[in-house]
Length: 219
Image (cartoon, rainbow, N blue to C red; front, top):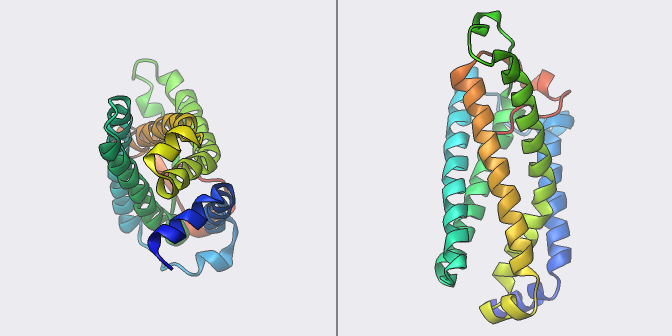
């Protein structure tokens, strides 16, 4: 079966493919928090390795923000090939993120923000923790709800021609929503990473304890 034929068949069922990929994605992330048997598939990591992965994930997410922004800029200037390359790269970076995030959480753990009176002198300190919680909540919600939208835009882009995308699919509208949610989620994730790892104190929850909680910092 030729590549074109496979693409045509996939293009006939973009919603079904999106639904399948969404279930797989939700299952993988949910498994590292809720299913001990799934956690056991990953090697145990030291705190140093977890910290290294957190830094690498933040770097990958920062680069993804750049590639997404470039992709948005290029499509607004009708540079379709550059746009496609940027968005495909962004999707590849998200897969790289998952390849680091899943073992980090399952085999290592997560970090939690600590309210430390030593920072009471910081201007607007009383607002730092609530702001952190708000950003984290928005980041998590966007991370969850944007998955099917992002995947749908990607599936459409990979299975349809440029002309089909413009005239026969909702790719433009869906892509705009997906990119907006994706960029905002990533930016907030990087900000919470900076707060936890470089600006204020945090505590470390090993994987066994983290399995009983929602993700604290999925970056």
